[in-house]
Amino acid sequence: MPAFEFNKEAKVVAAAAERMGLHPFPIPMLRNSVPYNGRAACIRNRTCCGYACPVDAKNGTQNTVIPKAIESGNCELRTHCVVAEILMDGMRAKGVRYFDENNEEKIQTADVVVVAASACESARLLLNSRTSLFPNGIGNNFDNVGRNLQSHAYTGAWGLFDYDILELNGPGATLGISDFNHNEKEGIIGGVLCTEFYVLPYGFSRARPPSYPKWGREHKKFQRQNYRRMVRLHGPVQDVPTPGMRVQVEDSVRDFWGIPVTKFSGSRHPLDRKHCQFLSEKAASVLREAGAKQVWMNVGGLGRAGGQHQCGTCRMGDDPKTSVVDPNCKVWGVDNLYVGDGGVLVSAGGFNPVLTIMALAYRTGAHIAGEFAKKGSAA
Image 1 (tube, rainbow, N blue to C red):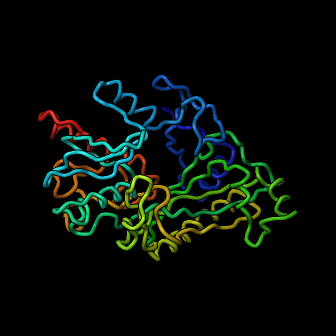
Image 2: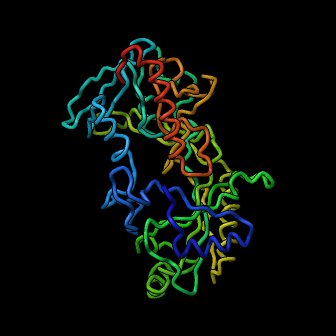
Protein backbone atom coordinates (compact mmCIF):
# COMPACT_ATOMS: atom_id res chain seq x y z
CA MET A 1 0.00 0.00 0.00
CA PRO A 2 1.49 3.39 -0.93
CA ALA A 3 2.24 5.93 1.78
CA PHE A 4 0.23 9.12 2.12
CA GLU A 5 1.77 12.01 0.20
CA PHE A 6 3.23 14.86 2.20
CA ASN A 7 0.67 17.58 2.83
CA LYS A 8 1.47 21.29 2.43
CA GLU A 9 3.20 21.82 5.76
CA ALA A 10 5.09 18.53 5.48
CA LYS A 11 6.49 19.55 2.08
CA VAL A 12 7.84 22.79 3.59
CA VAL A 13 9.36 20.96 6.57
CA ALA A 14 10.77 18.18 4.37
CA ALA A 15 12.54 20.65 2.10
CA ALA A 16 14.09 22.36 5.13
CA ALA A 17 15.14 19.05 6.65
CA GLU A 18 16.79 17.94 3.42
CA ARG A 19 18.72 21.21 3.20
CA MET A 20 20.05 20.36 6.67
CA GLY A 21 21.18 16.93 5.51
CA LEU A 22 18.33 15.10 7.27
CA HIS A 23 16.17 12.31 5.90
CA PRO A 24 12.40 12.96 6.15
CA PHE A 25 10.08 10.08 5.31
CA PRO A 26 6.32 9.40 5.10
CA ILE A 27 4.88 7.98 8.32
CA PRO A 28 3.26 4.52 8.35
CA MET A 29 -0.28 5.56 9.27
CA LEU A 30 -2.29 2.31 9.65
CA ARG A 31 -4.88 3.88 7.38
CA ASN A 32 -5.93 2.79 3.90
CA SER A 33 -4.36 5.13 1.35
CA VAL A 34 -6.13 3.05 -1.31
CA PRO A 35 -9.12 0.69 -1.07
CA TYR A 36 -7.98 -2.45 0.72
CA ASN A 37 -9.47 -5.70 1.96
CA GLY A 38 -13.04 -4.64 1.22
CA ARG A 39 -12.74 -1.26 2.93
CA ALA A 40 -12.57 2.22 1.42
CA ALA A 41 -9.59 4.52 1.05
CA CYS A 42 -9.09 7.46 3.40
CA ILE A 43 -11.22 10.50 2.50
CA ARG A 44 -8.77 12.90 4.21
CA ASN A 45 -11.04 13.92 7.09
CA ARG A 46 -9.07 16.26 9.34
CA THR A 47 -10.77 15.02 12.51
CA CYS A 48 -8.98 11.71 12.25
CA CYS A 49 -6.82 10.97 15.29
CA GLY A 50 -9.08 10.19 18.23
CA TYR A 51 -12.27 9.89 16.18
CA ALA A 52 -14.11 7.07 14.44
CA CYS A 53 -13.57 6.89 10.69
CA PRO A 54 -16.77 7.52 8.69
CA VAL A 55 -15.64 5.22 5.84
CA ASP A 56 -13.79 2.61 7.96
CA ALA A 57 -10.41 3.39 6.36
CA LYS A 58 -8.61 3.59 9.70
CA ASN A 59 -7.29 0.21 10.76
CA GLY A 60 -7.79 -1.31 14.18
CA THR A 61 -8.42 -4.74 15.64
CA GLN A 62 -12.17 -4.11 15.32
CA ASN A 63 -12.04 -4.17 11.50
CA THR A 64 -9.02 -6.38 10.81
CA VAL A 65 -8.02 -9.35 12.97
CA ILE A 66 -11.15 -9.69 15.16
CA PRO A 67 -13.60 -10.13 12.23
CA LYS A 68 -11.27 -12.68 10.64
CA ALA A 69 -10.97 -14.57 13.92
CA ILE A 70 -14.76 -14.69 14.31
CA GLU A 71 -15.20 -15.80 10.69
CA SER A 72 -12.89 -18.74 11.37
CA GLY A 73 -15.47 -20.24 13.72
CA ASN A 74 -12.83 -20.62 16.44
CA CYS A 75 -13.41 -17.30 18.21
CA GLU A 76 -16.22 -16.01 20.41
CA LEU A 77 -16.16 -12.31 21.26
CA ARG A 78 -17.69 -11.27 24.59
CA THR A 79 -18.01 -7.51 24.95
CA HIS A 80 -18.53 -5.30 28.01
CA CYS A 81 -16.81 -7.83 30.27
CA VAL A 82 -14.33 -7.14 33.07
CA VAL A 83 -11.84 -9.76 34.26
CA ALA A 84 -11.23 -9.71 38.00
CA GLU A 85 -8.55 -12.38 38.37
CA ILE A 86 -6.75 -15.25 36.72
CA LEU A 87 -7.64 -18.58 38.31
CA MET A 88 -4.82 -21.00 39.07
CA ASP A 89 -4.46 -24.70 39.71
CA GLY A 90 -1.08 -24.91 41.33
CA MET A 91 1.42 -23.59 38.80
CA ARG A 92 -1.02 -23.62 35.87
CA ALA A 93 -3.64 -21.09 34.85
CA LYS A 94 -7.06 -22.71 34.56
CA GLY A 95 -9.21 -19.75 33.49
CA VAL A 96 -10.50 -16.38 34.64
CA ARG A 97 -13.15 -14.97 36.93
CA TYR A 98 -14.98 -12.13 35.23
CA PHE A 99 -18.12 -10.00 35.22
CA ASP A 100 -20.29 -10.12 32.11
CA GLU A 101 -22.27 -7.37 30.39
CA ASN A 102 -24.99 -7.70 33.05
CA ASN A 103 -22.38 -7.42 35.86
CA GLU A 104 -22.92 -11.05 36.77
CA GLU A 105 -19.88 -12.96 38.01
CA LYS A 106 -18.81 -15.78 35.71
CA ILE A 107 -16.01 -18.33 35.38
CA GLN A 108 -14.37 -19.15 32.06
CA THR A 109 -12.00 -22.11 32.00
CA ALA A 110 -9.17 -22.36 29.48
CA ASP A 111 -6.11 -24.42 28.70
CA VAL A 112 -4.15 -21.29 27.71
CA VAL A 113 -4.66 -17.75 29.04
CA VAL A 114 -3.35 -14.63 27.27
CA VAL A 115 -3.39 -11.30 29.10
CA ALA A 116 -3.52 -8.33 26.70
CA ALA A 117 -5.18 -5.47 28.57
CA SER A 118 -2.44 -2.80 28.14
CA ALA A 119 0.67 -2.39 30.25
CA CYS A 120 -1.15 -0.84 33.21
CA GLU A 121 -4.22 -3.07 33.27
CA SER A 122 -2.32 -6.29 32.54
CA ALA A 123 -0.03 -5.56 35.49
CA ARG A 124 -3.08 -4.80 37.61
CA LEU A 125 -4.68 -8.12 36.69
CA LEU A 126 -1.54 -10.11 37.49
CA LEU A 127 -1.12 -8.30 40.82
CA ASN A 128 -4.77 -8.91 41.74
CA SER A 129 -4.45 -12.64 40.99
CA ARG A 130 -3.00 -14.03 44.21
CA THR A 131 -2.61 -17.58 45.42
CA SER A 132 -0.58 -19.36 48.09
CA LEU A 133 2.13 -19.96 45.49
CA PHE A 134 1.91 -16.38 44.20
CA PRO A 135 1.07 -14.35 47.33
CA ASN A 136 2.08 -11.07 45.69
CA GLY A 137 0.44 -11.74 42.35
CA ILE A 138 1.12 -14.10 39.47
CA GLY A 139 4.62 -13.70 38.06
CA ASN A 140 5.58 -11.36 40.87
CA ASN A 141 7.68 -13.53 43.16
CA PHE A 142 10.68 -11.29 42.39
CA ASP A 143 8.70 -8.01 42.63
CA ASN A 144 8.98 -7.20 38.92
CA VAL A 145 5.32 -6.93 37.87
CA GLY A 146 4.35 -3.30 37.37
CA ARG A 147 7.88 -1.89 37.45
CA ASN A 148 9.62 0.10 34.70
CA LEU A 149 6.40 1.71 33.45
CA GLN A 150 7.05 3.89 30.41
CA SER A 151 4.78 5.88 28.13
CA HIS A 152 6.91 8.21 25.98
CA ALA A 153 7.79 11.76 26.87
CA TYR A 154 6.44 13.95 24.07
CA THR A 155 8.47 17.01 23.19
CA GLY A 156 9.04 19.36 20.28
CA ALA A 157 8.57 22.91 19.04
CA TRP A 158 6.03 25.22 17.43
CA GLY A 159 6.70 27.41 14.41
CA LEU A 160 4.60 30.46 13.46
CA PHE A 161 4.68 31.34 9.76
CA ASP A 162 3.55 34.53 8.03
CA TYR A 163 1.22 32.69 5.66
CA ASP A 164 -1.41 29.95 5.85
CA ILE A 165 0.61 26.74 5.86
CA LEU A 166 -1.82 24.16 7.21
CA GLU A 167 -3.60 22.27 4.47
CA LEU A 168 -6.23 20.93 6.90
CA ASN A 169 -6.77 17.72 4.92
CA GLY A 170 -6.43 14.63 7.04
CA PRO A 171 -5.08 12.47 8.39
CA GLY A 172 -2.74 15.31 9.41
CA ALA A 173 0.65 13.97 10.41
CA THR A 174 2.45 12.74 7.30
CA LEU A 175 6.18 13.39 7.87
CA GLY A 176 8.76 11.84 10.17
CA ILE A 177 12.45 12.55 10.82
CA SER A 178 14.43 9.82 12.60
CA ASP A 179 17.95 11.23 12.35
CA PHE A 180 17.97 12.07 16.08
CA ASN A 181 16.93 8.65 17.33
CA HIS A 182 19.85 7.14 19.29
CA ASN A 183 22.35 9.94 18.90
CA GLU A 184 25.51 8.06 19.81
CA LYS A 185 27.81 11.04 19.26
CA GLU A 186 26.09 13.09 21.94
CA GLY A 187 25.03 10.15 24.12
CA ILE A 188 21.35 10.99 23.72
CA ILE A 189 18.44 8.54 23.55
CA GLY A 190 16.23 10.56 21.27
CA GLY A 191 13.18 9.77 19.21
CA VAL A 192 11.37 10.46 15.97
CA LEU A 193 10.09 13.94 15.08
CA CYS A 194 6.76 14.22 13.24
CA THR A 195 4.36 16.82 12.01
CA GLU A 196 1.18 16.97 14.08
CA PHE A 197 -2.36 15.72 13.66
CA TYR A 198 -4.76 18.62 13.26
CA VAL A 199 -6.07 19.86 16.57
CA LEU A 200 -9.48 21.33 17.22
CA PRO A 201 -9.61 25.04 18.14
CA TYR A 202 -9.78 24.15 21.81
CA GLY A 203 -6.51 22.23 21.60
CA PHE A 204 -4.93 25.03 19.58
CA SER A 205 -5.87 27.51 22.32
CA ARG A 206 -3.04 26.06 24.43
CA ALA A 207 -0.44 26.67 21.71
CA ARG A 208 0.91 30.11 22.49
CA PRO A 209 4.37 31.69 22.50
CA PRO A 210 5.95 32.06 25.96
CA SER A 211 4.41 34.80 28.09
CA TYR A 212 1.59 35.29 25.58
CA PRO A 213 -1.87 35.90 27.10
CA LYS A 214 -3.90 32.73 27.61
CA TRP A 215 -7.19 34.63 27.62
CA GLY A 216 -8.69 37.97 26.63
CA ARG A 217 -8.63 40.09 23.49
CA GLU A 218 -5.08 39.26 22.35
CA HIS A 219 -5.64 35.56 22.96
CA LYS A 220 -8.74 35.56 20.74
CA LYS A 221 -6.97 37.59 18.06
CA PHE A 222 -4.12 35.06 17.97
CA GLN A 223 -6.66 32.25 17.74
CA ARG A 224 -8.41 33.82 14.75
CA GLN A 225 -5.33 34.87 12.81
CA ASN A 226 -2.85 32.07 13.38
CA TYR A 227 -4.73 28.77 13.50
CA ARG A 228 -3.63 27.90 9.96
CA ARG A 229 -0.20 29.52 10.28
CA MET A 230 1.40 27.27 12.86
CA VAL A 231 3.24 23.97 12.52
CA ARG A 232 4.15 21.70 15.39
CA LEU A 233 7.10 19.37 14.97
CA HIS A 234 7.27 16.95 17.87
CA GLY A 235 7.71 13.34 18.81
CA PRO A 236 8.03 10.64 21.43
CA VAL A 237 11.33 10.57 23.31
CA GLN A 238 11.97 7.04 24.57
CA ASP A 239 11.90 6.99 28.35
CA VAL A 240 14.83 5.74 30.39
CA PRO A 241 13.34 2.74 32.26
CA THR A 242 13.37 3.10 36.03
CA PRO A 243 12.15 0.41 38.48
CA GLY A 244 10.60 3.04 40.74
CA MET A 245 8.14 4.16 38.08
CA ARG A 246 5.56 1.48 38.63
CA VAL A 247 2.01 0.17 38.74
CA GLN A 248 0.71 -1.27 42.02
CA VAL A 249 -2.77 -2.06 43.30
CA GLU A 250 -4.56 -0.40 46.21
CA ASP A 251 -6.59 -2.92 48.21
CA SER A 252 -8.36 -0.20 50.20
CA VAL A 253 -9.85 1.38 47.05
CA ARG A 254 -11.99 -0.77 44.77
CA ASP A 255 -13.89 -0.18 41.57
CA PHE A 256 -17.55 -0.90 40.77
CA TRP A 257 -16.90 -4.66 40.63
CA GLY A 258 -14.93 -4.73 43.88
CA ILE A 259 -11.55 -5.09 42.17
CA PRO A 260 -8.56 -3.23 43.73
CA VAL A 261 -7.68 -0.22 41.59
CA THR A 262 -4.39 0.78 40.02
CA LYS A 263 -1.96 2.94 41.98
CA PHE A 264 0.91 4.77 40.27
CA SER A 265 4.13 5.74 41.99
CA GLY A 266 7.58 6.98 41.08
CA SER A 267 8.76 9.55 38.56
CA ARG A 268 10.60 9.75 35.28
CA HIS A 269 14.36 9.37 35.07
CA PRO A 270 16.16 12.77 35.20
CA LEU A 271 17.70 12.07 31.77
CA ASP A 272 14.24 12.15 30.17
CA ARG A 273 14.18 15.93 30.52
CA LYS A 274 17.66 16.25 29.02
CA HIS A 275 16.72 14.08 26.07
CA CYS A 276 13.52 16.08 25.53
CA GLN A 277 15.48 19.33 25.55
CA PHE A 278 17.79 17.88 22.89
CA LEU A 279 14.96 16.77 20.60
CA SER A 280 13.01 20.04 21.06
CA GLU A 281 16.09 22.01 20.04
CA LYS A 282 16.41 19.89 16.91
CA ALA A 283 12.73 20.45 16.08
CA ALA A 284 13.15 24.18 16.55
CA SER A 285 16.17 24.27 14.23
CA VAL A 286 14.20 22.55 11.46
CA LEU A 287 11.28 24.98 11.83
CA ARG A 288 13.64 27.97 11.63
CA GLU A 289 15.16 26.54 8.47
CA ALA A 290 11.62 26.08 7.12
CA GLY A 291 11.02 29.83 7.43
CA ALA A 292 9.01 30.16 10.62
CA LYS A 293 9.11 33.80 11.78
CA GLN A 294 8.78 32.78 15.42
CA VAL A 295 9.75 29.46 17.04
CA TRP A 296 9.34 28.24 20.61
CA MET A 297 9.84 24.91 22.28
CA ASN A 298 7.54 22.80 24.43
CA VAL A 299 9.92 20.55 26.37
CA GLY A 300 8.52 17.36 27.91
CA GLY A 301 10.01 14.81 30.27
CA LEU A 302 8.50 15.82 33.59
CA GLY A 303 5.94 14.11 35.81
CA ARG A 304 5.02 10.43 35.69
CA ALA A 305 4.70 7.94 32.89
CA GLY A 306 1.49 6.01 32.34
CA GLY A 307 -0.32 7.84 29.56
CA GLN A 308 -0.28 6.84 25.90
CA HIS A 309 2.06 4.17 24.51
CA GLN A 310 2.23 2.31 27.82
CA CYS A 311 4.90 -0.35 28.09
CA GLY A 312 7.42 -1.98 30.40
CA THR A 313 5.40 -3.37 33.32
CA CYS A 314 5.74 -7.05 32.35
CA ARG A 315 9.11 -6.86 30.68
CA MET A 316 10.55 -9.66 28.62
CA GLY A 317 13.88 -11.24 29.53
CA ASP A 318 15.90 -14.40 29.98
CA ASP A 319 16.07 -14.32 33.80
CA PRO A 320 12.98 -14.60 36.06
CA LYS A 321 14.78 -12.52 38.68
CA THR A 322 14.82 -9.46 36.43
CA SER A 323 11.81 -9.96 34.13
CA VAL A 324 8.17 -11.06 34.14
CA VAL A 325 7.93 -13.04 30.90
CA ASP A 326 10.40 -15.17 28.96
CA PRO A 327 11.44 -14.57 25.31
CA ASN A 328 8.15 -16.15 24.16
CA CYS A 329 6.15 -13.78 26.40
CA LYS A 330 5.20 -16.61 28.75
CA VAL A 331 4.95 -15.63 32.41
CA TRP A 332 7.80 -17.16 34.37
CA GLY A 333 6.70 -20.12 36.49
CA VAL A 334 3.39 -20.65 34.68
CA ASP A 335 3.61 -22.72 31.52
CA ASN A 336 0.26 -21.69 29.99
CA LEU A 337 -0.02 -17.96 30.78
CA TYR A 338 1.16 -15.28 28.32
CA VAL A 339 1.22 -11.49 28.06
CA GLY A 340 0.45 -10.01 24.64
CA ASP A 341 0.66 -6.22 24.91
CA GLY A 342 3.15 -3.39 25.38
CA GLY A 343 3.92 -4.46 28.92
CA VAL A 344 6.53 -6.92 27.62
CA LEU A 345 8.60 -4.18 25.93
CA VAL A 346 11.86 -3.41 27.74
CA SER A 347 12.11 0.03 26.12
CA ALA A 348 9.51 2.33 24.61
CA GLY A 349 11.82 2.97 21.66
CA GLY A 350 11.78 6.19 19.70
CA PHE A 351 8.63 5.41 17.71
CA ASN A 352 5.01 4.59 18.45
CA PRO A 353 5.16 0.99 19.73
CA VAL A 354 2.07 -0.41 18.01
CA LEU A 355 3.90 -2.17 15.14
CA THR A 356 6.29 -3.84 17.59
CA ILE A 357 3.38 -4.91 19.80
CA MET A 358 1.64 -6.39 16.75
CA ALA A 359 4.77 -8.24 15.63
CA LEU A 360 5.32 -9.72 19.09
CA ALA A 361 1.64 -10.70 19.33
CA TYR A 362 1.86 -12.64 16.06
CA ARG A 363 5.11 -14.22 17.21
CA THR A 364 3.60 -15.22 20.55
CA GLY A 365 0.51 -16.54 18.82
CA ALA A 366 2.63 -18.73 16.54
CA HIS A 367 4.48 -20.05 19.56
CA ILE A 368 1.22 -20.89 21.38
CA ALA A 369 -0.14 -22.63 18.29
CA GLY A 370 3.02 -24.69 17.98
CA GLU A 371 3.10 -25.62 21.65
CA PHE A 372 -0.57 -26.26 22.36
CA ALA A 373 -2.55 -26.89 19.15
CA LYS A 374 -1.46 -30.52 19.04
CA LYS A 375 -2.85 -30.93 22.55
CA GLY A 376 -6.28 -29.64 21.55
CA SER A 377 -5.99 -26.72 23.97
CA ALA A 378 -8.38 -23.74 23.91
CA ALA A 379 -7.33 -20.23 24.91
